[in-house]
Length: 154
Image (cartoon, rainbow, N blue to C red; front, side, top):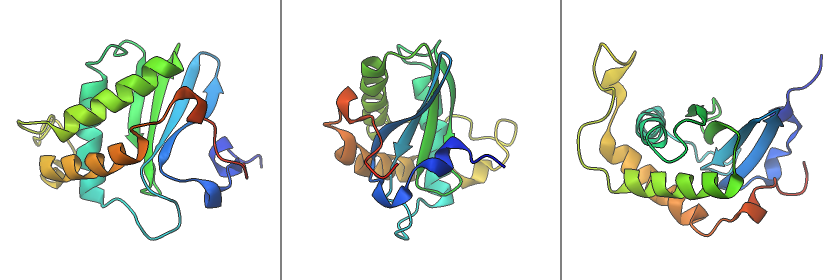
């Protein structure tokens, strides 16, 4: 059986950052790695779920809204995947940073926080998302397009 692309990356060398995970035709998958893998420092389900709701909503209302295909958490609880069609990497990096800042400063109700809109709506907390993205933003605030390649060991 052929390994999937994400299993080809040597996770011992991945640090918090933004990476291009793969490119499939005109779709680029970005790895928004919020934690160093295999260190025990994992996102809680509630923080991960809360960040997902806010990030997905805000990125789908950004300058690249028509290009966003998907945003969601990694099962390993160390980051998220953002899939973008026809990506301009510099613009995507800029919108990721803007979205994180918008979440850190977010005031209001959690998008999708109702029994009708979400399968686990009681597991959402705006403050947890804000706290988590502030930490991540500090890790990536200076990232550029040149930093999107996975570290050696891939």
